[in-house]
Image: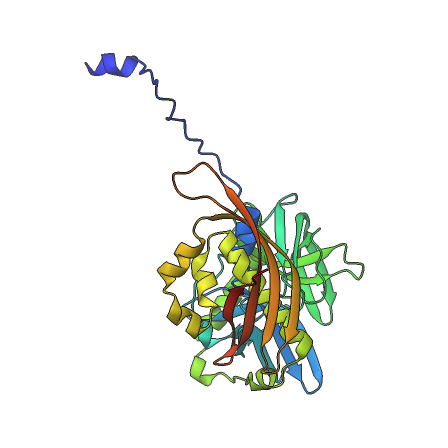
Length: 354
């Protein structure tokens, strides 16, 4: 009986059954960027009147952020701005004098899911990569390219760059310390560090080359012994233009989260009053049938009570369950953004009636 069954092919007439292709799939680019940007932040190092701005990314659940040494080495005060416009003080966990790497810690970011990193495998020439920069100063700078060279060696400003990646993705001011992400896996493979003056070539330190040193710093550091700065200077002295940019970024982040169905991220940046009026399940139900969303025409003003009011034109499509028809609509929404417990939040969303 076994021999007969083994030798007889079974015919399948159900067209709903398909052969599964086990070949590796390339992840959706927008999903990679959205997921990564939650863990990419702007690093602001201050020393008197001098400010150096760079990038960094959260790599473990201790709240440790990888960045470049040249971003924080001379800083008396270090602040971190996250993708949802929160500001936290940071302290140096470890910093190298020879290699352009450093680790800083933000205790408030402990126990958050970090970005995925590749500790062992190195990239090859021709591999597609994504370079992410500071999410604020340059509104989530993202550049695409390939590994155009490996094992490049040179020195810049006292730092030795050995066996680094040469990439076609541009590295400009504000990108230093940001992650270099493998386009296929979505994992971080390098630390963006330096670029040529014309911006046509960038260089990234392979994470596999420095991860052992980074993890030693993280494992040895005790949070209670670290020297943290204060974020009160940034929060209490609001720069009008920066405040507007932060507010618009927060709204972009909210709408992008709705677009890719990341309702948890969208809900967490709402103010406490809005969350009190809507449970998460009720909030999710409002947007779960939205299948497409485009937005433009931002108009932003600063109000008298230190809040930002922004109107946004939104085009969206809705598909109800068990229905083939897709309905399209256009509406203008009014967002109120302001500080709540020293963190930037969306305080109100209302539809503008024509």
